[in-house]
Image 1 (tube, helix red, strand yellow):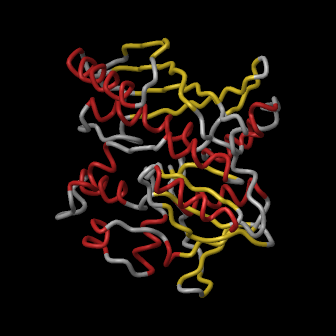
Image 2 (image 1 turned 45 degrees about the vertical axis):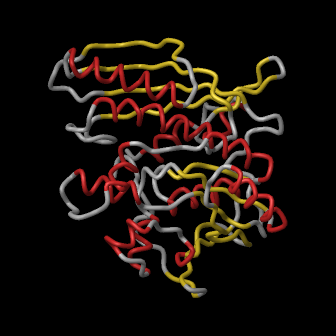
Length: 317
């Protein structure tokens, strides 16, 4: 069973309004007139991190992927609960705790509790974090609000973490250290998410790949969405290793772990969006737009082109 098919099975009974039909990465729960944003992400050895990744880096990733979900809703972190299935002994656990403390300090979020289990040493380390945030006053944007005529934007550059993973696996030689840093230390921007929230119609983070996450916005919103490959922002480190032709841009747009913000907004808000990016030191790039019909489309230099067989990372495939 794939992740998507399992989530589809859950939708029949995940009917509380806070669940947002399970089309978003978060729940938004009204508590006495205040809206809480709730998210839970797991990282599992061999799936989300390599067995020889440093424990401090694993801790950072566990916190960062959850903060990325909050950033995509413009939320302010209030606290986290952790579930830790440890299988590496005391030294690894101690390093992980040090890394967790550093990550929580960086994102200014407290650890409120959770649960721990010591597992047999031959089992994979399995970690989960529930993050709780306060929604912005105007409401937490979802994936489902995009409208025909909106522009599609993304923050930062795309594909660096994927190349960093390849370097860590020994499948790529000669890349810049910044690529490995993008893989080991994703950097979601909570302040930028809060600044963008009142300007966007839909917003999500790029976790499984730009194309697959754009397709999820299109599906949730019931609109057609075109990604312009030639506009996808690539870092200089990416260009030095892979170049920037159409094939290379498809590769970047289908790699996961970028944890950038992907959002839609009406064209008349472009000036305000770029100003928000400048205030927060973030590059924001228009990479497409929304139109009639349904589903994801792709273009290159203004010409429609076929979607790749694989849009991004899919659990269970």
